[in-house]
Length: 395
Figure (tube, rainbow, N blue to C red):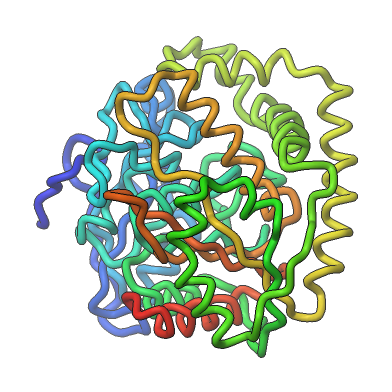
């Protein structure tokens, strides 16, 4: 058993399982965020009261079964933000994982443990989930690869819900080739083929801190070396703040519909930030939620039309590096809002997004995102690997 030097795994006995003796992932190891069921273990969902009120799982989640059948070996369950409702990675009950790439900064959430495990070399693949950025942001903060697949492309059977219209099963790796190999197991058939042209989303680049945009220049150049000079486009004429606000309102209602009945019955204790988000979800104005759903339909039509022919958008995954551990709650929330305006582009529209560890700002990693139309996940993973090679990254 590899020593957990960064607090990535849930406390207690490690959940382990041997994979099939043969398969496309034989010889690789994986971990799973503690919102996926593993038969015989309690799915803790990042909260002691959830663990206390739920029995051990009777079967494996779909992604767990698929990875085991492909020959990968399960080496543990990883920490998550409580009920997956947060972007920093903080968990006051079980401990916040250390960000191996920047120990004085948050690892990102809600898939904090999975990102930390991969970044620390504790496993080859780690399953996370992404509703509002929970794979993409930890990957960017920890300097690794991550994918939010097209919505609905990967099974969420046996996974705890947060916002079912937005929830996706994503994963992390330290190498682009392994990210792709995991996709060959987890994704449905099809979706291969050439991609292009490259579209530089102006709103997202302007939204990024200047140092972040500068740090990602070489990554952008690597993508342009493969797909040609990036064409400048505007995809959010309403502004990224509107993308964030509509996503927040529509997703909050889903979070309360999914988890509110348990919260009302169990009266769980929550850490800072999580408690306030669920209170806001409970109080959400139905008219704002409906406006969010209507906006989502408009954005989907716009973005899916733009990408239908194979175009790929490129922009900073997050506008800033991970917040410092000393950041106040108000500072964290400010970063969250600015970040989710960008993550909502793919989140609202169900698009496929891969983030590449393409730069650093001082001691902190920052990621570059490639985004394609729904169903083009396999082609996007192949492109990401080629961009990584062109950029001289771990491919």
